[in-house]
Every structure is written in C-alpha cells, then in structure tokens.
Image (cartoon, rainbow, N blue to C red; front, side):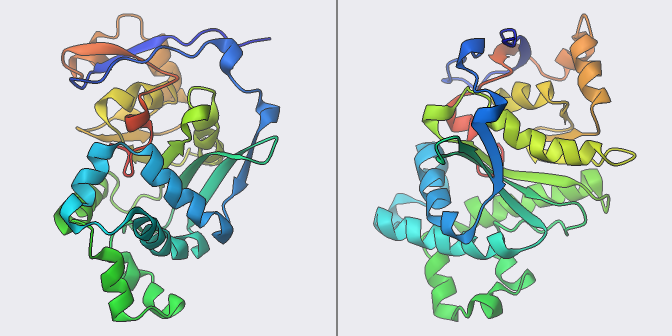
Length: 283
C-alpha cells in the first residue's frame, strides 16, 4: 500500500528559494530498495565528490574563497584527506544509503552519544583526535589541507555552533548530525528519511530516549520537524523521542508553534531544495 502524499509544515522561507512540492507516493523507493551500511575508507572519494557536487555554490564560495582555491581535483583530494581519519573513529558513524544495484544514494554522519562536543569538521580535530600522529601527517601536509579554507567561515562558524550546542545540551549524551546529503537523482525518494531513521531508532531504544541534535537552514526545518525535531534557536533543533512527533502532528491550530517561526511560508516535509538538504553543518 502506497503512503499518502506528504502534508506541509509552515516555516520561514528564505528569499530567492522556490518552495519544493511534496513527493508523490509513487516516487518513493520501497524499503527493500534502500540498504543502510557503514561507510568505509574506500568511500571517501565518493563522499568528497558528493560534498562539492551537492552542496550549493554559495556555501563553498564562503568556505573556500575563489582566490584561495586550487584546481577542483586538488580541492577534492584535500577534502577527502581531511575527512578520511573520521571514518576510523568509533564515535563518528558515517552511514550510506545504498540502492539494490549497489549505488550510493545518500550519506549521513552521526556523532554518537558520549562523544565530546568537538566537531570533527573543525581544524582542531586534527589535534583533539590525534590524527596527525595516526595518519603520519607532517605540519606541511596539514597546512596544505587548510590553506584554501576560510578560517572564519569554516572553523569560526563551526566553533560558534559548537558553543550553542554546549549551551543547549551541556554534558547530556546525544546524537549529532552533520552532514546529511542525498545525490540529486535520488532526492525526494525517501533516502534522507532512512538516513535519519538509522539514528532515530537507536535514540528511541533507550529509556528515556536519547536526545538528537542538528543545525538546519530555516527552509529545511519542516523535514526535521516531521521527524520530531523541535526548533530551539535560530538554526538548532533537538529531538527527544517519538512523543514529540505526535505533539507536532496533532496540534490543530499550530499557532504557538508558528509564532516562533515568523511570517512562515509552506515547505514540503518530505523534500527540500538541493542546496538546503545538503548543508555541511545543517544550516
């Protein structure tokens, strides 16, 4: 039996971004067509390729200014090199959605409960995770990996959002999502939802449910609200179990929720614009 067409949740719209429509039920892939596996070190080039291909140009123009960039193959190689050691960390769970034909359709990275609030995407992870020693990197190699990256737009922004996460959750163990991306040809087909469910099921298996945390662009919030995430600030969202989903879905007038989301416009709860679905730190 096919699932009904998705409903809408009102969230603030970003000027210049066209609203996407709910996915037609016949476009959704069956559960049997989506397999969730752990990523391996052999997937790192595909991950780096996807980050550059899927994330919006405006994102990378800020993070990697044009005047600092090497050629595209070098950029991809250096990004893959920066990310590679994170695939070996036990608390960093890179997962992939794989088609029945063996093709990677989407990727997500969940940092597991108990890990310190120290985003592995930040340059400081090289020292905090001891990657220089583990990977036998020289100082020159590390400098090369980061030479074309804006310290303020990348490291500074990540650090600011880590501080917000620390203020919201303190020492409370939680799942942290960054990034979530679906390849364009598979967007709007239930792939992203499966990557969310992988961690949601584990979070809800504990008593009480383990909190989940992410940072989201305003226009992408409806997708996460549909899964039980509640906005707690400008970009951050927290989920504390499936009961939250019912509270959002059963609220008839929605006025209290919508007041905090000023001048909201409708966006799909099942699909978002490509540039928002694939945001490095969720915004």
